[in-house]
Image 1 (cartoon, rainbow, N blue to C red):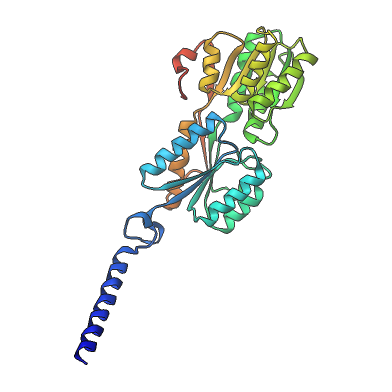
Image 2: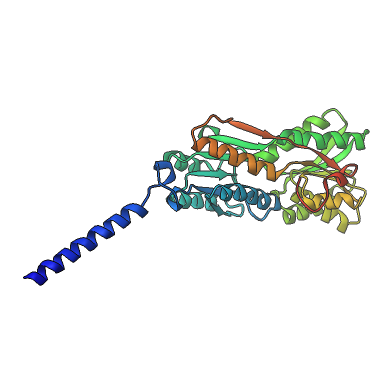
Length: 323
């Protein structure tokens, strides 16, 4: 009888000790008043139209650096220009319990189902670089002044060719950032005697733009310039122009990427780029995200400066990194 009593006392003591240990280590999440450690960690989602573009690689690295410096976590997904995949990946991030999302859409209209899901889940959306069409779902937007990025390119083109001439444009209608750049470019060249003989969807992609430019050069051998809505499309055009030995054609892009700056520094056909800073966009996006989650005042729209880098000033910015 005495043995049974002692055994029962030992079990009761062990249960009490385990319960006490669990109480000490099982704190809640940071947003629910947790006591520290991993349970306090905020989790952010990140999605861009593609992580195959150096611009978005650097932007993601900028966001990750800032988030992890705060002891928090970033989940990155790469839809690789597939809007259906992007929607599915965002749904998966919602299931994983993200506290906020940095979102750049593959298709500014087609992304709507994901925006609805995020709103229903109560997850703040920091839309960056390319605006979504259904902006009412967005908590905040951070991005370059894309219209100005196209405008400064157009202004440089007008100075270079004061008599005008025939030109081609590589756009991408599903990317609103490129739509804005093209709009700014068009405003800048209006009334300057330029004729757009070809305007096609380069999809913001080097290989696609290379093939399209080859066809344009065949159909319109008398063009004097090509404007690409981003640097990858402009670099695709550059490759086609060089292969055709048409170094007299001026190439322009938007981004100010290291590859574009290196091409400018060579002194060849690549004349200029409407430069932006993925590093700055990343930092500003994170600042806004934390203000939202900490219930502090924030700007609904945060513009990031754009400016022209051309063959005259490229050495100031260097060719081995982003500005």
